[in-house]
Image 1: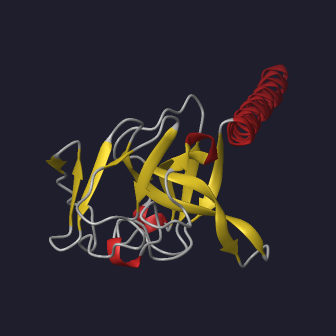
Image 2: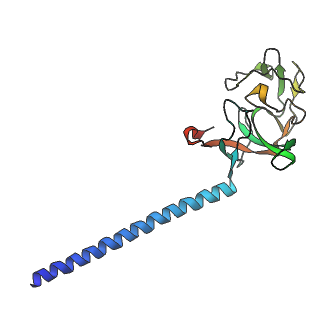
Image 3: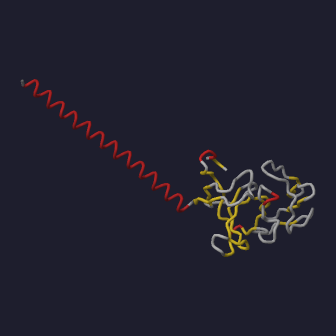
Length: 201
C-alpha cells in the first residue's frame, strides 16, 4: 500500500517537473522571438528601409512592384551600385508634387569622364568602354546628353543610368543630371519581394 502511494507521489512530482520544463522552454522561445522582432524593428528604423520599385527603367535587373531593402548606413557610392535617389525635378504623381524617389545604377563618380556613343550604344568611363552585361537595351537614347563627348562628373556628385537604357530617365536628362550624393537615399541590398526572387541585389 505504502509502495503504491510512493509511486503515485513520484508520478505527480514528475508531471510537475515536466510542466515546469515546458513553460520554461516556451518562455525562452517567446523571449527569443520577441528579441528578434525588436532587433528587426531597430535595424529597419535606424539603418534600413523598404522601397518599392516603380516602373521599368531597371529591367531586366529589377521589375515594377518589387520590394527592396535599402540602407545608407556608412554608405559610399561605388561603381555598379544600385541606388535609390531623390530626383527633385521629377513630378511625383503619388504626392502630386515635384520630388520623386527613383532607382538607378551608379556609372560615374566624382572626377570621372563619361562619354556615350549613342550610335553604337556604348558607355565609356575615362576612355574605357564599359562591359555592361546587366543592360536590357543598348544606350541609344541621348535625352539631353552630348553624343560622343566627354563630360566630367562634378565633386560630390555621381552619374547614374537605368539598366533599361532606352526606357529610363536618368543622368542623361537635364531633369535629373548628375546626382548630388546627399540625394542618395541608400543602396539596394536585398530583394525581399517577390519571395521567388528573394536574395541579394
